[in-house]
Length: 274
Image (cartoon, rainbow, N blue to C red; front, side, top):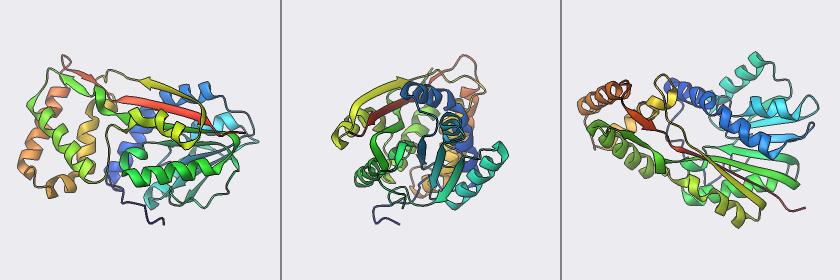
């Protein structure tokens, strides 16, 4: 494991597994848009770094076709097991998952047509972010595509504003940032690719209104559940206060008159020079 690797702050609990699976479903449309924009040829070799329980391996599998291959890279053992089960259940015969660190994958250098990550940079401190991008870029063939997808919380608001929303979002941000995360990394993606040496860099931002019944509507509550112990350990809020505010916010978000504007989904991609 790389010396720059850091613990995954959200953990590998069942709650987090379920959150990641729901998140992958919710972000599938945006991911498909990006892959169609990039254009991936049949027979390509692709890597999904930090794939979690499924990532975009299903979407890549469809695009590379039977002659192509997709490799998912995942460090958390529970997510590796979930991903392998999902691959078997979906019959994705051109996909395999390896148990490895995203910062030091062990994969062949200069060998892949597409290397992708989603929501890894957001969890890493600056030095580890740089190491991840360098590792990803090193896997690409000349002319290969590096693709990034990250959140940016610039748009994340609810209206009418609610005291429990303000308190819980502030607490979440404080704890997440203290653990090395950065909720505003999305805006930096194009610049990072340019600094890396990528050519023909493009960028797209998606933003949605989170509707009742969609996972995005209660995403903040799911995040807090995944980091529940860390939130309490921060001493910013007591357990009873946390539960009271989560209950109040749940009721507020269940109200059809409440508007929730989701986080920006920022995508950026570019090519390694030929």
